[in-house]
Length: 207
Image 1 (spheres, rainbow, N blue to C red):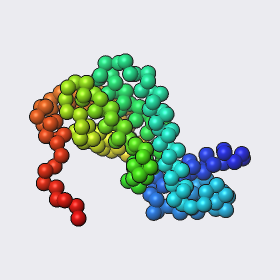
Image 2: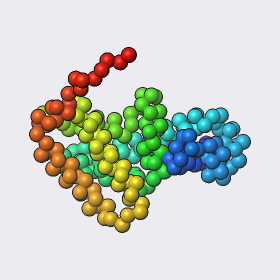
Image 3: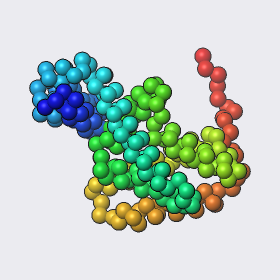
């Protein structure tokens, strides 16, 4: 197998292993066994578990970004409800196609790695989109966008975790998420959004 092709297989095995067990619960031997190679061959590609984890996270992140960007480009001119629906759909579609990648990217250590590397995580991307939507409608669009993104990602993550074992209608679930989000946003008074957008005033100074 060519070197680059073998590296791709190893990264796929790493994504699956780290996604299931986390960084601390996964060894280099675990990844090598999952890939069907000996550990010495894995070390020809990467010298440490930290470097392997970083490579797997960055790879899955870039593949997800490319998938979302392609799908979003086709819906950018749609009405707002259709855009919201497409954004839920694309995440659930990707999760169905690449469950190991989603499990890995949902790991706290993966999000911390992306943040430290200056690469946005899924909540960051969604917050930026929500901020643009809120700003366009004249609503608060600072911290409240981060709060809303965390809420929506939480809903979607739970659905993705249960999804492989459920017999629900995906289209109906996407409609439910879309209408729940749209109705919720329409029903939230601006005053509530403004309060959620303001920083805390009772925070103690550090040190």
